[in-house]
Image 1 (cartoon, helix red, strand yellow):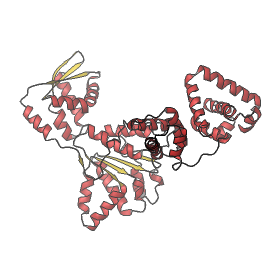
Image 2 (image 1 turned 180 degrees about the horizontal axis):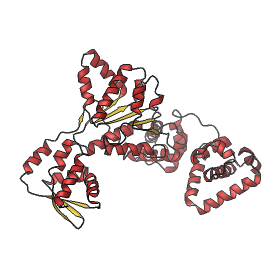
Image 3 (image 1 turned 30 degrees about the horizontal axis):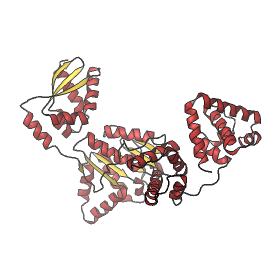
Image 4 (image 1 turned 135 degrees about the vertical axis):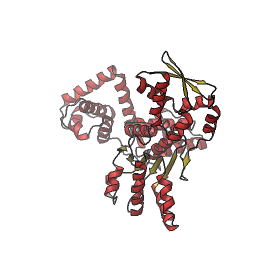
Amino acid sequence: MTPENVWSAVQDVLKNRINPEAFAAWIKPTKVIEFTDGIVRLGVPNSFFTDWLQHHYLADILLALKEITGRNLQIEFVVTASPNDQESEKLAESFTPPVQVSPYRLRSRYTFETFIVGEGNRLACAAARNVAQHLGRAYNPLFIYGGVGLGKTHLLQAIGNAALEIYPGLRFCYTPAEALFLELIQAIGKNTRVEFKNKYRGLDLLLLDDIHYLVGKESLQEEIFYTFNALQDAGSQVVFTSDRPPKDIPTLQERLISRLGSGLVVDIQPPDLETRVAILLQKAKQESFDLSEELAVYIAARVKSNIRTLEASLVRLIALHSLTSRELNTALADEALKDLVSPEQPLDANRILNAVAEHFKVSVPDIKGQLRTKRVALARQTAMFLLRNLLNLSLKDIGYFIGGKDHTTVMHALDKISELITKDPNFAAQLDRLSRELKSLT
């Protein structure tokens, strides 16, 4: 294939992947100059084009080139004089900016870069990133559910913010379901329902938050059903969030349940200790607040419910420290937490066992039972080690508590964990963190 044929084929690929207005503005005016030594030199009308293409479309271009040529190539942009320069510049200048049809604005701080990824939200975050990069082509609809304050709205708005970077001219809407319902009621009252339908059915991206608000609202369910069908038929992307999966939302129409679950349904679980610590440290960094990891672990061990409460605890700690000039320590953290979390009970064997089970992602009955898989065996031995070191229980009492094991089994477990601590630095660090978390509860 000639360089011109290669680039023409690449443009054909990109034409099917990029917003039509964006393709016409930024991809179509480019011309291939040279194709040599693994480098494709593309002619562009001006330096503004170079900056825009590098920032927004370079990855798409490289991927399309690899699909056409089977090779990993490099791109160089060269500003060239062309009879089409004026036309291209006018097209770029008149290019439609992003259009949002809702008064609810995306918050700039809700991005993928500021979203802390852990085991409980890894799949949801990966799916959200994929959707933002490939609107209408990946997981449509995407349905994210989880408890209050776990980051659903953050992910939803991160999709919007990322999509706006990738797709200039995007017609989009972010709105809570409650606001959509109120707007629908007004449209019915003012006899402007046709305008309401046209407004939402002409979108490229609809981000609908808290869709569980649909419970008992037949008219809104009806409108969302037909709006979703229209958007999907047009190749537009829809993303929903809820506090529960579609099938568990009461009074929801069966056909709507089917539509909501027809793409990808992912959940967000409460963050584990490591993720909670990372969230606190990032929030502290954003606030230019010097929070030690040790104190972050102390706070995160107590605040397990959701991210909002976690961040609120840090805000209170910062306020107490700055307003009173008191030393930043666990006592001050306790004061910051006293109205946000329930008082903790003294550390006991049950709490240690529950913490170990959560850490290793096994069940307490498994630890106390006879199952001998590698994960369960390590969890069982770790529990025995911590019961001995944190509570100073006798070998007999430990064996009795862990399902009636004899004292020789407990002795073997203690030796095994001691050996692992010396040979496996990663395990030693995990055990130290778990021990510190448990100690902070006493």
